[in-house]
Length: 174
Ligand code: FES
Image (cartoon, rainbow, N blue to C red):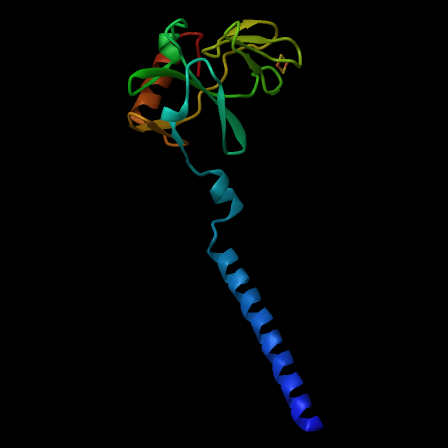
């Protein structure tokens, strides 16, 4: 009787250890399948632009950086050279880090511009510096346009390449 209950206990104990071991192996296997953090950081971010509304800033993360996405409303003519046309709308697509010392500017929907709280720098809705210490416009991340509602951040598509080529010829740089 004692032996039987001891055997039962030992059986359950071994079973539990085996189950824990199996779970640990699965976790280890999953970790080895996952891409390295460096690979994930260099990855792409797909954005559904149809969720954006006029004059309301959306921020997504790409490579650990905030990406500003702003749909231009009818009352805010886009700066053509820096705007990105996706479907029927024009957008600002920019890295949301101040080109002075890297703070994240805030969007002011009443004045339709960005203000950097760190040293008072200001940018237009299209990301062009207009006041204070920022020396250049907000940077534009590589992107490609997949369809009328979708862009992929991190992919250098033809629209991005022609945008960068047109901006590099003047001070309105990317
Ligand atoms: S970091 Fe933005 S104005 Fe200095």
